[in-house]
Image (cartoon, rainbow, N blue to C red; front, top):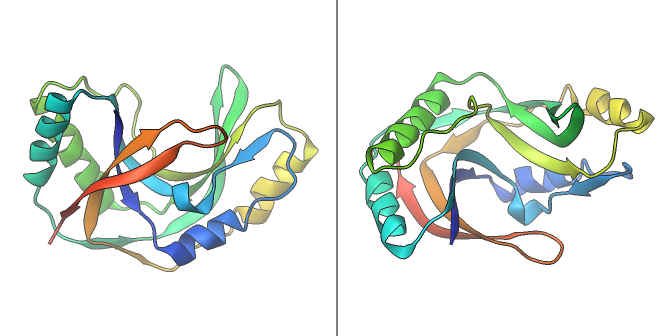
Length: 177
């Protein structure tokens, strides 16, 4: 089973973000129901390992906080744009929570995340080199700012690869309060 830890987003925010999709060649837009803010990708886990992950996440303590999604950007892989995203306004509480999750998972033997954590919500994955409409997309979404989003729990999701898009299932929610 493929697992990841994330913040689920309010449906209204997901709908707004899904509304950003337009005819951008090579873009595979993420469906609203799949939008989330990843805190830690875990990957394949066997049943026993999944139980250890569950216990580690259940032991995390913290306070709820709020965050704001803002701006637009992209990730590159091998010099090509690989994904479009909406970012997160700098938030020390979010970074602290992510560090707690990373520490808890490392304590049970998971390898450390190799990439530096960059909080974001993926809007689209790119299958082709970018064209002139790419800059138009980023410029038109760069001033986006969500209303404050209350963060009161984290969620362990499973991911099952489907034909068009993966299917995400919320397995367990862990309260921060």
